[in-house]
Image 1 (tube, rainbow, N blue to C red):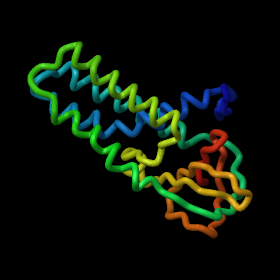
Image 2 (cartoon, rainbow, N blue to C red; image 1 turned 60 degrees about the vertical axis):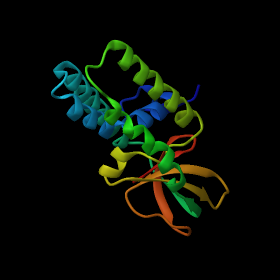
Image 3 (cartoon, rainbow, N blue to C red; image 1 turned 180 degrees about the vertical axis):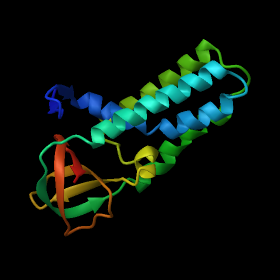
Length: 177
């Protein structure tokens, strides 16, 4: 298990960071679900908003890590536009909710999110994250002049030939500074 250094001196696993990025992509979905459930179940509405808030705070903390940046020369750039259609279908879940949700419904949704998370977190499909988009970030797959491929979280449009100053958060995950 690989570990990345936290700014407070502790350690965090790669899988925690990958799952944090994946789960944060569902914050807008949780808000939509909370709105849909607001008249049917106040407890589930409150729980969805609390979970969304925790995920937002976690993501903001991750984006504010103070890992020493270094320069990277970008040779090639790809984005995840081909992944959007498959991912966006999960955003239909709140519109399939009918009547009062029972614990079995919640368990079924949790299993679905877990299965999707396994595919995304393990197969490096991290490009699509609506919360990062709302926060004005983009995720690219970039290839450096050394031929190494990274995911890059950036606030600007990245093209081949750019030089990027970024912190290495994981083996293959960069955060532009």
